[in-house]
Structures are given as C-alpha cells and as structure tokens.
Image 1: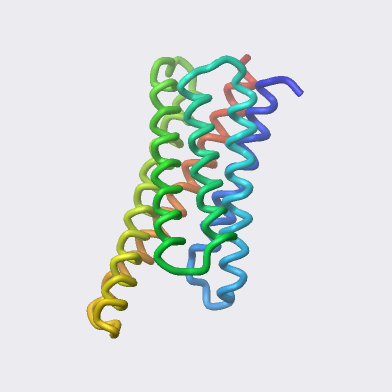
Image 2: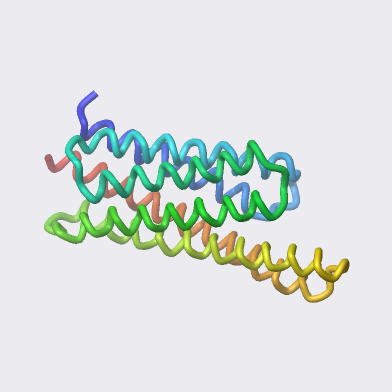
Amino acid sequence: MENGQLEVVGAAIAAIGTITAAVGSTPFWWLSEQAKYNLNLWGNLLQGTGNALEANGQGEISLEKIGNEIQAVGNSTIVAGLLLLEEGDAQTRLTISGNLMQALGGAAALGDELKDDSNIGEVYSIVGNIMQIIGNSMQALGDGYDLRAEELEEATGTDNGSDEDNNKGEVLNVFGSWIQAGGSVLSFIGQVIEEEEE
C-alpha cells in the first residue's frame, strides 16, 4: 500500500473511532454503562490505530508525522486507563492526559498543514485539526470537572455541590467528543481530496 493510501485508510479508521467514542460519551438512555465503556474503549483503539497508520504513511519526519504519533500515544493512554484501572481518580487523570496529548498532537500536525494551504484538501485538514484540538481540550476540561466532583465527594462524604461539576463535565465531554468527531471526518475528507490531487 502506498503512503498516500495508508494515510487515507488511517484517517478513515480514526474518523470511525472518534464517532464510536462520541456515541459512547453521549448519555443515550438505551445505552448501558457497559456499552458506553465498550464504545469508548473501541473508539480510542480505532483512533490510535488510525493515527499510527497516518504517521506511518507520512514517510519522512515532519510535524504532521510527529503530531499523529503524539495523538496515537494519547489514545493509548486513554485505553490503558480504561483497561488497567478501575473507574476513579487515576483513570480520570489518565483520560485527561490522553486528551491533552491528542490536542497537542493535533496542534503539531496543524503547524505543518498551515505551511501549505494551496489546495482545498489542506483547508479541510486545517479546519478538521482545529476542531479536533478544540474537542480534545473540551473533553480534558470536562474530565477535570468530573475529577473535581469526585474529589469533593470524597472530601465531604456527600455529593453536595458536585452535581453542578458533574453536569458541566458531562456536557463538555459530549460536545467535545462530537466536535472532535466532526473534525476527524473533515480531516478524512481532506486526506481523500489531497490523495486524488496527487
């Protein structure tokens, strides 16, 4: 498989992963907690795989390649937290770190894409990356509110005052997940357009 095709396949897998994780983050009444967990786990596994394939397809060292590698590490951090730790402070901290790494990776890749905005595919990729950075940052902030609510609950022995933080965290997580998913789809479209033009 050629490098350009590898990047397209990676972008497609990453987009599927972000949508899967976004569904898992959304409080649909018909989804059990186990189903949400599984969707988040598989979504992050797919995102990490897609980002790694994109990085592999880039060939030489560039900010975009490094950015995709950092994003893959961010997804792997979230997956490690989901698989190795029980729900609680440590898992939430790993999720925050993973989302911040994904945002950092997106920013690095964006730096490379801003150098060349000569075709419409690059424009899609730039907008998609900006959306992913915003989405990941919102998710990290949402998890920060959740962590604060958990710490308040432990300190006081009650959940007074933590409901507001929980609600803020959930809203930020849901919107952040879907913004990231939309950005990932735009990046995929941009990758397809770039491949067709080459």
